[in-house]
Structures are given as structure tokens and as C-alpha cells.
Image 1 (cartoon, rainbow, N blue to C red):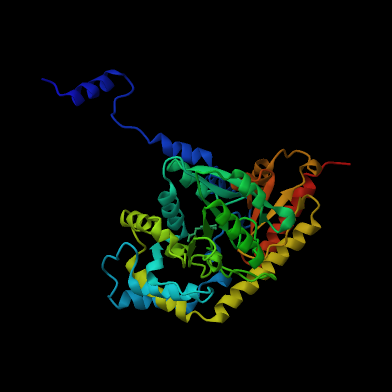
Image 2 (image 1 turned 135 degrees about the vertical axis):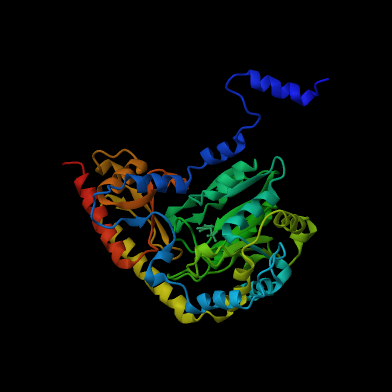
Length: 432
Ligand SMILES: *Cc1c(COP(=O)(O)O)cnc(C)c1O
């Protein structure tokens, strides 16, 4: 007798082209198509650069300043890694939640800004903030659930949600009001299947920094709706305007907060892949509702950052000097002024809000003033081709006909880039 599964295989073989018994997971295709991925667009832009242009390419598209000498990480941090390797204490596997000294150090480091103490049990070490997002969305993705995400936002959330069948609904950020969350649209979107809303503060892509008052209103709205807040604070303390950084966890007694972060941006080491998930929840609601158990289960199924990187964490967090942080802030502040001033001088783009945090700013294209450019994608493609300047079109972050400009680069290169942007716009201006 031929067993049943062989019959099925036989059918496939007879079906001509379908010779194989496997194919790609269509759900992933949906995920990749549903969010126009930043990486994909940037790759296309870099490919469009004219190879014969003798000028260096100015990359204002992505947020990785680590290549610039002026943003080199603290020596203390580099030494901590070397010492960690040399100690031979961190050559083994790590527990799936991360090693205890690192979790304790992260708890202490984040507690400095909170009205209560975090415990090491509130901390889960992840492979950058990216895995923190992945785990958090996976934990929340019960069938039928939906999450509320900001627009504009960070498209990784959308791609990840699509790949696990978690429904996404978008609330708007208001450019006229410092890119604050439109809380009315949050209330209008939420229903009995809404599990969480996410905020990114300091903001990518807007460079916004929310006030204490606004964060409290977000907490109160989430509480009223009975949903938790996911606070992406990967740019924690990268602020250079009038609003200081306030962690969402400060409102953890109003609403349970899951805080996501990493050392990638504050220490300018995104390649070290060291991040965290924090349950900022002094009332223990997340534990009671089984969320804590789910997070533990979820990290049990995946991998951790290299143990020697974790071994260096206490030293990095405790010993990095204020000098390093303030030097970085000074450069970012100078770069943010260059952006704001150069955009203000350029009638073809408008910036409704001076950036005060992170390393990004959103600017709106004044398309009616441009001759042969129909949308943001075309603007960025021609810019790459003619001026070797890479800018992310707003469509990639949910805002068509806007631009996201990263100023996490050497200020001299930034000036050069804005000079080329001006020349480009003037060349493509509508003739009167
Ligand atoms: C860069 C970034 C991340 C990813 O951080 P890693 O630590 O590099 O994984 C997550 N969220 C936002 C908003 C970011 O800009």
C-alpha cells in the first residue's frame, strides 16, 4: 500500500512546474509589502547615485551616526567590552532573560528617572530595541487583537504586526502641535479588541520630545480605554530643546507601561545589539494578566545578545561620563539648528517643528513649486541621482510627500548636503 502522504507528493510531482513540496510563507510577503520597508527604499536610492559623481554621497536617510569620528562611542564603553572578553567570565550561554548583573544595572540606570524602583525581574535583555518590539507585539497578538500605532511612525512595527496577524490602526501625530498624539483619534479608533497603543519618545521620525503633561494625558487616555502603553524610548535622553526627557514609566501607576530601549542610539553603537524590555508597572497589573509570563515564554524561544556584550553593560551604564553625553548632545543640537535654518531658507520645503530630540526631522515638500517632480519618492530618487544626497521619502514612514531627514551626521557634511538640496530645488523650480 502507498501511504497517504506519498500520494500527495505524487500529485505535486505530476503538476508540472510544482515539483517541490514547499514554498515561501505568504504571510511574510504580506508583511513585507504592507509596510514599504525603509531598508528597501534606501537601497534603491543608493543604487541611483551616479557612480561618476566625484563628490562624496551625503547619507541623510538612515540613523546610524557610528561611522562619523565625532560620534565615536565613549572609550569607557569600548574598554568595558575588551575587559568583558578578557575576563573569560562571559563565554557561556546567557539565561534567556539576560544575565543578572546586566539586568540589575539596567534596572538601576532606568530607575534614576522614575518615581519608583525597578527590579531586575522587570528587565528582559533583547537583541537591540528591534527584538524588544518583536517580542512585545508577539506577546500581545492574540487572535482578533489590534494595536494603535502613530502616523508617522517607525515602519518596523507595521511589518512585524503583519507577519503575526496583529491588526494595526493608526492615530495621527499633529505637526501643528509639536507632533503630539491626537488623543481624540486614539479614542475613536479603540474598541474592545484594542490591547495597546505605542508611542516613540523622543520621536522618530519627528524629532519631537513630549512634555510631562502630554505624557500624562496619554496615560490617562490609555487607562480610560483599558489598554497598555508601549513606550519606545530608544532615543532616551537624546534631547536638546526646552523639554527634558520624561520616561513614560513615570506614569506606570496610572497605566501599565512596557518600555523598550537599547544602548544603540545614546551610545552610538547600534551594531552592539543590546536592548531591553521593561515592565514599568508598579501595580503589578502585567503580572496579574499573564503578560509577564508570556514575555518570559517568548524570550525563551529566541536568542539573546552575545554574553560578553551583556557582561560589559554594568560598566557601560555606570561609568560613561557626562562629558561624552554632553558632547554628543552638542553636536546633535548644532546639526538640528543647521537643518531647521537651511529648511527655513528653502521655499521648496517646510519644517513645521524644530526638532528637539532624536536625530530626525520631518519636512513637507511644496510640490506646486516644483516643475517635474510629482511626489516624495520621485524627489528622493532624482536627488540621489543628481546630487548624491540620500533622503528618506515620507511615504516610508506613513507621510506621503514629506521627507524624513536624519541629522545624525557630521555637521560639515550636513551643510554640504543642504547646499546640494537647495541647488537641486532651484534647478527643478517652476518657472514664473
Ligand atoms: C533605531 C530604532 C529602533 C531599533 O533599535 P536597535 O537598538 O538598533 O534595535 C527601534 N525603534 C526606533 C524608533 C528606532 O529609531
